[in-house]
Amino acid sequence: MARIAVIGAGAIGGTLAAWLAQTHDVTVCARSPLDDLEVETPEGPIRARPRILVDPAAAAPVDWVLATTKTYDCAGAAAWLPGLMGPDTRLAVIQNGVEHLQRFPMVPPERTVPVIIDLPVERTAPGRIVQRRNGSILVPEGAEDFVALFDGTILAAETTPDFITAAWRKLAINCSGIVSAITLRPAEVANDPEVAEVMRGLVRECIAVGRLEGADLRDGLADKVVEWTRRAHPDSVNSLHADRLAGRPMELDARNGVIVRLGEKHGIATPLNRACAALLAASAAV
View 1 (spheres, one colour):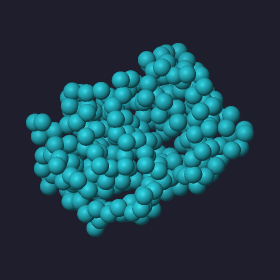
View 2 (spheres, rainbow, N blue to C red; view 1 turned 135 degrees about the vertical axis):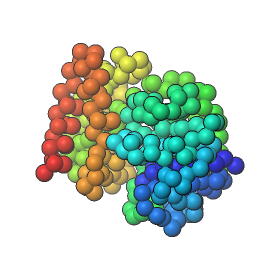
View 3 (cartoon, rainbow, N blue to C red; view 1 turned 45 degrees about the vertical axis):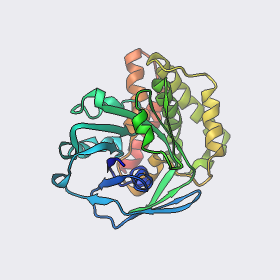
């Protein structure tokens, strides 16, 4: 049984904490107190009563820290690390984007594990989450001990020999999701042929930049992203869309801005990602 601290009680953090608490000693580091966690999974509800902390001063060292906050809240997550990180503690960064290792520079890279998660979940109330399918988790080779944490859960965790490609493939999906946040329509919006073509354009820009960053991305990925979105639950809402609806900050930089920034570094124009990010940012400011 491992001692695990999950920083963040949102959809991803709450779901992971609930599953891990079935077999491990779990602490949830949250902004507000919670009584318990309940996740409606494809196989029925699961419940957990992990230890809840709201004050970083009360934190004690654990074996693993899972940072699941949004990328714009890394500073808040980092406030927990002095209390949670012992000499052998490892940090798993479970966030969107492709810059996992750069977000917590106070932790040595050799003790940091970047994590890609594909888990469609939505928080309906504090501590209450809907998990729409089983999901998957990918980490680089060498992080088999992290994978082992999920033994006995319905979350398929495994290592990959090419984490860079896996991260950029996930970014290709995420960058296209901005169309839902702009239109305020769930995954069914991909059935609109004109919207689908915008999604393909966003992904094609991601592919071009990702290749220069070392990712092995095929041209057909743009069509696959549209197909995957169309196959999703029609009412599925991605996190960018959910954050806009709730009036929260949005991960525009991690999902689309990073493509623009790295495109500029390589001299590649990314007009669709730039335009969509600018439009969404402007709409949120109204």
